[in-house]
Image 1: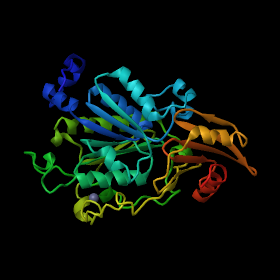
Image 2: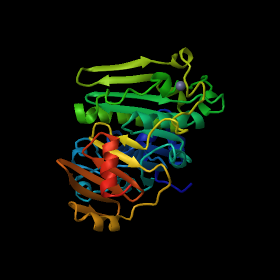
Image 3: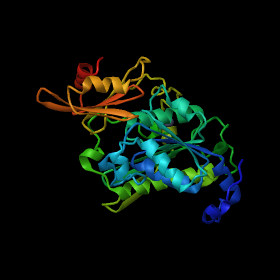
Image 4: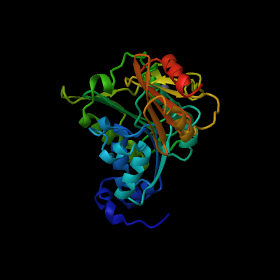
Length: 365
Ligand SMILES: [Zn+2]
């Protein structure tokens, strides 16, 4: 381990259960941050300041103006430059704490890549915006015996829960002196995702920035407890809050695993991780957009060549990360975004088949 200046962490090492030994554990640990939007940017900021050794940030999106209300790591210049969130976060974090190693990955997390990104991670922190990927993270956490800190915020409400997987005794939290500290998993609590279109989204009901910040900081506290080995301090309840209604609840869920027959942590069927559930065309949560990804291992996009071809169809802008084109198709307006890794997002529709059609028409199937 390299030598670190512990002075910057002095106020933290004073805390009970922390000390220099806790700080050393933190500096030696790797956090996989799944998503770097609202929750993720708050969590990344705090984790970098706290001095985690390695932060792996995976996010598929680019910074947009409407993000700035709550996504604290980004600024107006990131919007102007169309910088991917993971990359923009990495640049900001380097200025905040240059001791922290940050790996920025611009990609959509799915069952084909999550294990690769998670390989060295000691913990998964949830900054996601959809159930499918959360269940995927939960599957991997249970399969590998890695803690997973779930968090979500929409409207004025927020939720958080820490999954400490059951590992039949091999995990440190199951052999702690205070007894077995394993918890239910996310699917013990919510066995199936809600049907599409039934949950409120940030685009339909908005989101209060302070609800996001509270949930993310709660997740960070849980992460710091785990990484410093303070397993007995980890929350064993489901946090559920509504700041506008002045409600903060801690729901007891410890018996959820015993009561049910969880497909994930009891039957050890990892349906999301095995790719049995999930799709290659995903409607993006309330954003009137569909993301397309080739199932087969297709070649990456040559953005410049495509840009040259599309200039006759609409306004095209291109940089090293993405191509964006505005298309008028019949009486409808669409925006197609192509990323170098072979992904595309079609804005202007919620229907995968319409998106595939527009994409095929202008970019090619
Ligand atoms: Zn479970």
